[in-house]
Length: 171
Image 1 (spheres, rainbow, N blue to C red):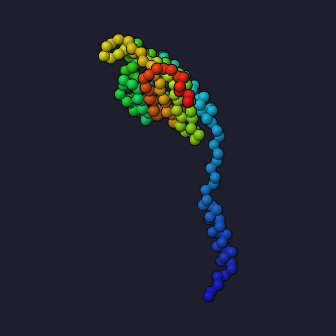
Image 2: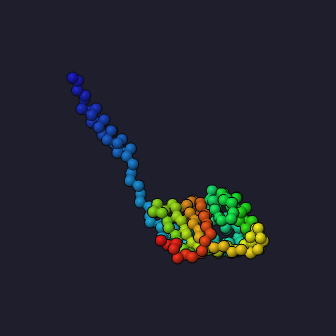
Image 3: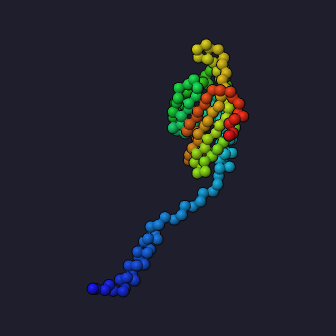
């Protein structure tokens, strides 16, 4: 049996040990807790969004959505993407009776800090396309947000008709 020179072991062992340490992943750096701040940011953005609807500012309305955002609103076709959302909103804003108000009742931000949702109640006024008479509908909505490089953006805008009470939203 042939023995290896001691000097070879003195070199190989430390090199292998260094490689194994260098290849292991460092523990993840803990991210600061931002959920309270994120919640406030989203609440404020929804207040600004409601104001954009009240003043019929289409650019500010559409800016709330992610590029691939979708809107699912009763009585309207589902639309996806900012261009389609802009076209749908533009049609609504041309109605002289158009009015939309909403109140955010709940904001929940994920523990990972990259997704959030809001719930609230809305009141919509417009012209019934069939009867050409004024109509008002009330209901609830859910907005799903994702944090993007330019802030929180809506990826799903979902509304349903029904009583606009916010009593049971915060369960």
